[in-house]
Structures are given as C-alpha cells and as structure tokens.
Image 1 (cartoon, rainbow, N blue to C red):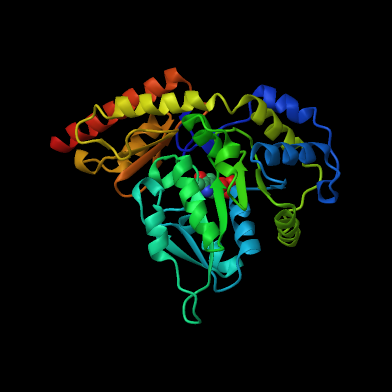
Image 2 (image 1 turned 90 degrees about the horizontal axis):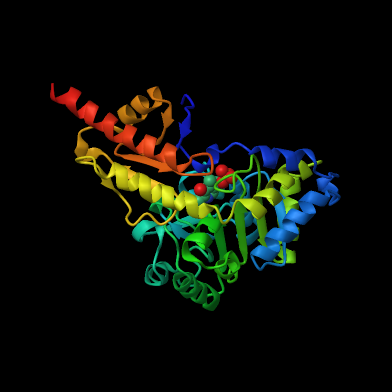
Length: 353
Ligand SMILES: *Cc1c(COP(=O)(O)O)cnc(C)c1O
C-alpha cells in the first residue's frame, strides 16, 4: 500500500497530533517493569476507573491483551465462545490455540453480535468427552459487523448466562469508546459485568502504541506474569502513556465526529449503482461496501483510489472497508466519497467499452 493524503484504510492510521507529541515530550518517566513509571501508573489507574475495574496493565497491543487474557482465564483444551468473525478467531494468527491451547466455539449472529439463545444452544454439557467451557468473548464494537454496538441489554443477557454457568467473560474493547459515544452509555456500564476488558489506544484514540487491559487485582497479577514472560514489560514507557492520557482527555468525545463522517461517507458511496452498504445503519466509524454487483473488484477500486492519494481497505473478494478517524475531516470525507463514486463509474465505463 502506498499511503495517500486521505487514509481511510483503518483507524490505526492516525499520527500523534502536535499536542499529543508535546505531552509525550514532557512525560515524567521511570522503569515500567518495576512499577516506577508515573505516567504508566496513572494511565492504568485512569483506565481501570473508566472501566469500573480494580486495576489494569499497560501492554504493547490489543492483540496481546486478548492473548494474555485467554492465557489467564483458560487451560489447554478449554473452549471459548466467540463470534465467528471475532478478531481472536481471524486476526491473531491462531494465538488462542498457540498460547492458551484453547479452542474457539464460533457463534453466528447478525453484525458480529450473537444472541443469548445462540450461546445457550452452543454451551457444552459437563462430561468427560466434551471440552470444558471456559469463557465468553465479545467485541465492542464488533469490527467485522461494521462497527456494530452491543446494547447494554444484549451484554447483560449474555453476562447472566455466563455467570449462571460459571464462565469467565472477556471484552475485546478495541473500540469500546466508539460504542460508548454512539450509544450514550458510559464505558464503565458496558464493562461492568466483565472479568477482563481492554481498550486500544491506537484505534480511534489516535495514539502511536499501546493498549490497556483491566480486571481484578488477582487477574492483573497473573496477566503481569505473562507480560513479563512474553517480553512485554517495558522501561520508560511513560512517553507512550502520556499519549494515552492525552487521548483520554481529548479524543473520546470527538469520536462522534468520526461516526458522523462515516455515515456521510456511506451516504455518498451508496449513490453508486450496484454498490451496497453491507451494514446499515452505520453505527460507528466503519463503512463496509459490497461492490460485487457493480461489476468492479475491490482491488481495482483500491488501486485506482490510491492513484488519487486515497486509501481504503480491500476487505475480501467483494468487500471494501473504510474507517473514519481523527486524521480525516469532513472535507476529506466528501472528497474521498466523490472520488469513490467517480472511480467505480469510470471502471464500469471502461468495462463496457
Ligand atoms: C485492532 C483490533 C484488535 C487488535 O489490536 P492491536 O492493538 O492492533 O493488536 C483486536 N480486536 C479488534 C476488534 C480490533 O479491531
């Protein structure tokens, strides 16, 4: 991929803003591995409070948050219940199998959200033949469902079943704040029933590195052990934490703009003949576009847009994904939308000739 002026490939594509960089430069630092980095300590306390959890640990990435949580919660041979399109199923290089030795029981459901009934139907009986049920995982928002938001009711219903069956509950909260802003529900309320929950600093929050995993003191103590084992312990990481603290102050409420921009982008793109928005309504910052009936390939569209210095993601053989974020303003969204429509039409014209 050649990076363009308007990069809608992912919300990970943000650069730290000048003000964020200034906060990083001014960070007080210490040895994180020894608990002596004041910025990291503050960040962890702050995230734990925001998520209504006892404590938290700073990790290099969201993927490591998921993997470590599974390691702590599950034993080899255990079973994890997650949606078929979950990040842990599709984008962690089989890490759950490698590290936790657990297997995933993949559930179906609209837009990356499974129902309590689907969960109950899948739950194993307790006998010596079937895998031991261990954990239920949900993604807030559900990336592969177009950034769909689990409602509080849906979460509470799943949590009730998990509790009754003595299963742990884990939230992949890579875009939890998008959900909180979109639904007008505090992140704490969404996170309350979970045994572990993490937020990504590098998605909509716009930081260069990092994620924060929260849970009980006992859970985080074990998580720290794995962080140490895996080489995830850091030194003067306060510079990274400073970016996180800055983002928590300045980049949460503005996610509403990303959501409006995503809706606007979808509106423009949908004018194109044969092009369909896969997930409607657009709830947060992700726009999935099916171009299969427009007679164009995602790859062609992506490459042609790249020539115009615009990046989108080719999600599959038929789908394109665009993510809005803080480095893309309304004017750029208008420009990218118009360019998308022109590009599709010009490919269609060329194909007809
Ligand atoms: C990006 C993402 C992750 C992984 O986070 P990284 O910080 O990129 O490792 C996990 N789950 C979801 C839903 C994501 O979108």
